[in-house]
Length: 160
Image (cartoon, rainbow, N blue to C red; front, top):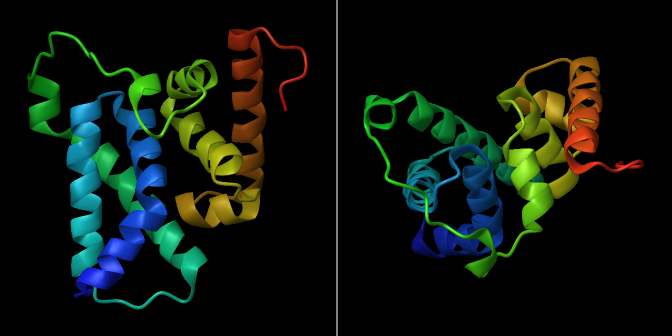
């Protein structure tokens, strides 16, 4: 179990990353906060050691993505009807370029993670392939197809 200081430092370092990933998958602020808490609770209870800060960040990202996927498959999520989502990305402290982020969020699931990890977190294709458990060439293909989809949606000529 991690100390309070270690958990607080991890929250300071990775809070924005965890929230962005959750918003990307869940598109709902209250669900994002629930997953945020569960991710850092798992971090606090994790007994393993991390090789370095990059390994720790990759672990946090993987746990966040898995928690979002589990939530989306849950009985609760499938059987609750929301009146409407009133969350406005631009009103939060972690402001995101909403047009592009919203388009990334609207991509099919298989493209969201690779685009986010590559462009928002700065990971290479080989690092992403290790994180998501796919071959490096598959990651390149997913990135290429996602860029084409975004280019069509955003109407840009040179989206890279």
